[in-house]
Length: 424
Picture 1 (cartoon, helix red, strand yellow):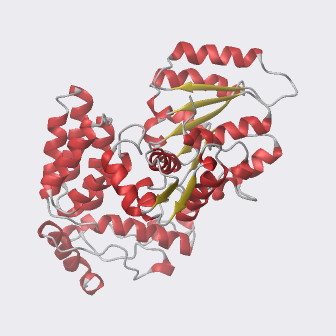
Picture 2: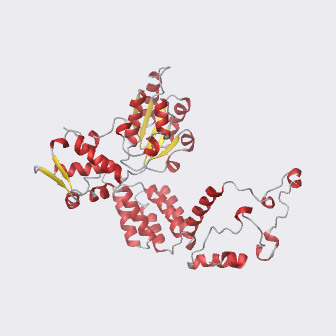
Picture 3: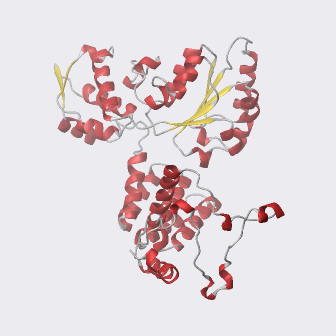
């Protein structure tokens, strides 16, 4: 039986690897390490189908070092220790450390991740982890601190078109067919930057057409996918599309749609903690100061899911989704911190004004630290105007109120304190 197209088209060298030029292009960080013949442990974070597993295999082949693979879904602590022991026995003095590739490392338990620490720290193995989830949530801090983190991006349109043309012209099976590509819009849209999805769609369209010439256009692709709704997604989950629809439904104040997309995730077997994390993010990003209780409720829903488990956990998640969707919205804090970060990058490390610095020693007092600082609680209303920003940024506005009922109170308080500075 022939391998699937996506497997047949898996690149074997960096020259054939498509996308991720910020990591493997000429002069990029991973390319330099590979060319030098030595790599440090790292974790690849990115959506499905962008080349995480392929990149690990190419590196192992290029370095000519033993390559071990573990799946976090099927492996336990015993399997981890067995692989580490085999790696020790296969290590030669002149050879780079064996590579241990762990797919879906975010699914490893704390104990499983702990069992890796010693081997990674001593260089018994070079760890390459792959994850579709934010490692700062799912990978324990000691292991994360021993690894570099590289972010892989969804493939761009040009990357996908290059892959499509290569498959049609170079794949041993597709070369036997006459394939005419008239339109690519639907294929690119459905693939969503995922190379595996793109090749699955191509294979589906070609195999379902018995004519002498296979014509590919948008209507053909849509028709084939409607007949085979899961054919272009191996796991039957439109993971990133559905979570995007879920968050946008909350942001758009549509509780019906929010519940529908949540149900789609639940039925698709999504990790409840992933849904809960997205609710916490939405509460902070989209509801924000318009209803500060939203963040409290989202955190409570997260805790409830962890404590009571599944399927009962669906109830607090649904309660939270409805509450967030029906809450007034504000992203003023989100915009404010992004503005502040941009300002810091533009202006560098501005010195803290002397009056805002502590003076725990006599020398610091003599140098003027804390001199002139006004203690607000000593004044009516617990406020007294003074400078808090660095000298070069005096008068700079960063946070701009958005006038929902709850945030209006905050805005009026700032007007009362600062007057014209906060007038929009």
